[in-house]
Image (cartoon, rainbow, N blue to C red):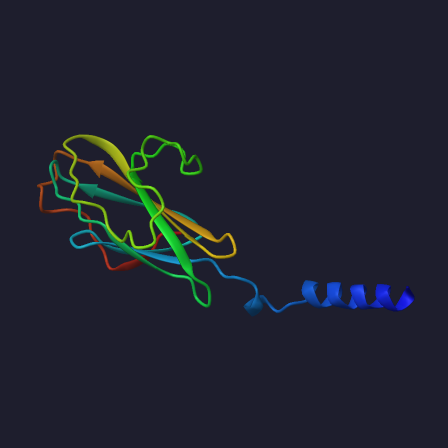
Length: 151
């Protein structure tokens, strides 16, 4: 009985002292829009952009799960609660190869694109692009940038 307790304590001690590199890292999500730029997200993040009325938005994304696996993506427009799988804003259910949204545009208001990627070991990264439509901005002249962190 004592040997069994020592073995259990030794195993527990080993598990609790795993190096940080052995712990699953966040999934790195990259979102790209050809005119507006590219952003990197890990865990959860938001990026704001400004566009003119009717600007065609062509968002695509990829993810890197490191040593793990990406198991699915989903996206939605104007999602109110990204944690709610039944939020009516989700445009697509989880799919392993869903890497872009169809071209979309807005005439007025503030809108959002939410993209969520999930991987093995219950890892999830969610990114939100907040899109402000400004009538003073010509349809093809928007705020854009280089590779940025969306955190």
